[in-house]
Amino acid sequence: MAVQESYKKQSDIARLEKLRALEKELPIVCSDFFRSISQTTSTLTRLAYAYDFRLFIQFLIKENPLFADKEPRFFSEEDFAKVKVRDIEVFQDYLTQYYVNDEETGESHVVQNHELGIMRKLCSLRSLFEYMFKNGIVEANIATLVSLPKIHEKPILRLEVDEMQKMLDAVYSGNGLSEHQKKVSENTKKRDLAIILLFLGTGIRVSECVGINLDDIDMENKAFVVTRKGGDQSMLYMPDSVAEALETYLDERMKVEPVEGHENALFLSLQRKRITQRAVQNLVKKYALIAAPLKKRISPHKLRSTFGTNLYEETGDIYLVADVLGHTDVNTTRKHYAAMTDQHKREAARRITLPTKKEE
Image (cartoon, rainbow, N blue to C red; front, side):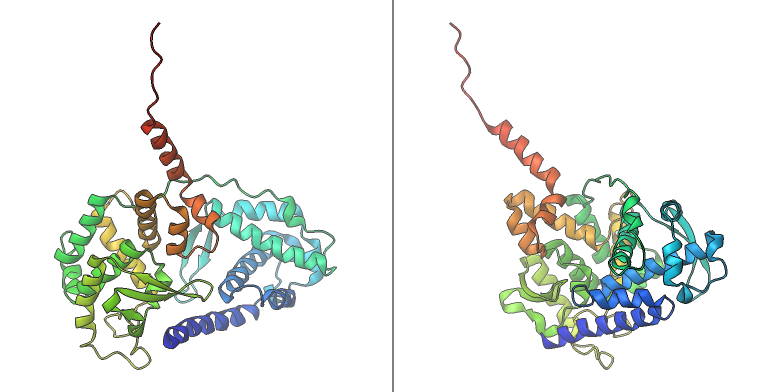
């Protein structure tokens, strides 16, 4: 377990380095804001704030003549005081689609945000302006005067039983893969099968999956330890099919000599390093497109939703689902599966048989 904490710590250190690099591009007030919330937020949250603040300031410099030719890091407190409600409203519209340059390749690509993405970025601005308002930098939190987009609830996207079977068949047999993919799959199919079955059979998050270490596995009890979002550890249990696939992969895994620093990682890449979240996301997408070509947005999180849906349909116990999925607030679980709750209520109503009124 200590090594898994080390993996989590390494990830946090990498995010902290990114945050500090970003802070050098941002005004001092942003660093002050990050410091004020450092004890109550994760590094990942602060990093997301930093990206949002940089995007907003870059937008202002580009679109508002008042701030033309400024560098984001020299955007002063006086400049923030000049920002108007209209600037944030135009920014909200801008967020639906804009172009950014890739930091590695320098190539430009389009970014599109839907309701949730736009809302999150506007909430970031609300937090920053609230901090500046409390510290007398601006006269009001004008970001709260901009209405957040209405979120349209979407049905839970999940795989049906036949689609899950097709996905597993694609992993094992290679059906639907290109010739190149089949060659790669010969070296990864045991690993890929274990990963996909872990998602479908236990509902773990992709971050939890890549963080599992060899000494977190207890095959005798078909159990394993994961580190949850907040850093808490949790013991989960595997169905027989998951345990069998994992044991098969472990036989192969123990023959591999990992790169130094990755010796305890359960799932390895072909480069003998701990597999990355991006690699797991790509392999899930690859097999899901074969199994359910019309469901183009199947991701590890959707496999998690598939597990949660199946568990709730089998048990009807929202608290059990919340516990197994690692939700700290059962309302989060209830929100995601509210439609299913209604479905159960309707089913209950159909099952109730009342005596009919006798004719007189």
